Length: 495
Image (cartoon, rainbow, N blue to C red; front, side):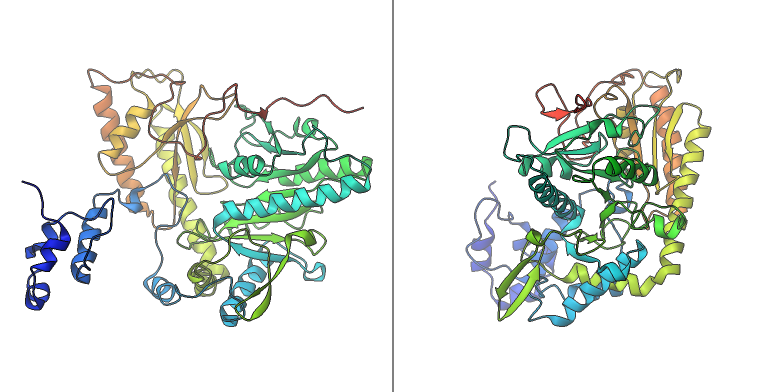
């Protein structure tokens, strides 16, 4: 029997029926939710709420989603103040000056974590996640290169495009940046012995059309850190020989830039290094805020090209903006300020160190199982990455294990590594603040149970390392193939 539309049901309901009938006893709760066109009549708020909530309830449990880096828990008072400020427009600094002040305070505090020197007049902004922050960091490199190249007499309008050097472990936002702004991506391949940016070869990819080098503090595939200090030394040596066209470093700290300051303060990767000119991070990852907010900071006014700053007349004021996006809610900015003030430095340190403890426990348990090769044991950020040993002696694949864990609610992705390592399949767990030790223990128990089930199975997909399965694409990007215009070999050195 065809279900009655919501509108017809509501037409037949009087006020008493609407509000006295239990939600799941109402006819409206048995009607179809609108799909292709709006319903004709309004729906009573209780029923609309419950219908949508019920529809969403069959999704995965966010706490068990060990795929995502995005924060899945905030304190009730944080969500309350964010809900109470959702109507504020982050771009409208004239109408909401106190909100704008909180944004500036966040920029200053985050810049301080990264050892920005106030005497250099650092500048920064909030963004919609670290992807927009990466775009702005990339644009800063591009605009700066254009000016230097023109001053050096280089024709920037030839067929040779400007290029960006980055490891093959990049996140998709960098591919978007290069495609949108017609930049050549020069990828330094990952290898088993170099699961981060290869310092032995990275400078082979640099020439007069290089706008900069992006170092990644927390590669999404494995969680490893690029050696930014070593890269700074290599870049400094290059700049000494190329004073007209010096290159600079942008650090993509989407994951690591809000962990390293608290757990490894002596690690030099930030503005303490001469050639690091801009850094981005995700406030909604280890910045402990719900999606989506990001941050980008430039070390000085010199590092931020004036062409990136716009002065706009908007709702009665003349305001500076350097963001790609425009109108958006300020609630995530308020949430970021809340968690910075609420936790303080010591609180952040306790949270990040506790999360690392849980991830390292998981790495030890996986290692003791004897069949996994651990590629990352949460040495930098709370990420564990592993593959099957060649001599594991099992008939199943990591895709099978991922499917079995999903039956217990756990989302633990299996995926191939990037180009030049695509025959290697790995799994990864991203531990976040709400992934407690008790949950980690339960995950280990479920893994052992499902491994035992797979070992006894009569049929599975098979242990095929290089087979691309449907399901998880960790970085949101397509696999690199022969048709992709991506530079994965070092160019011929210029004379």
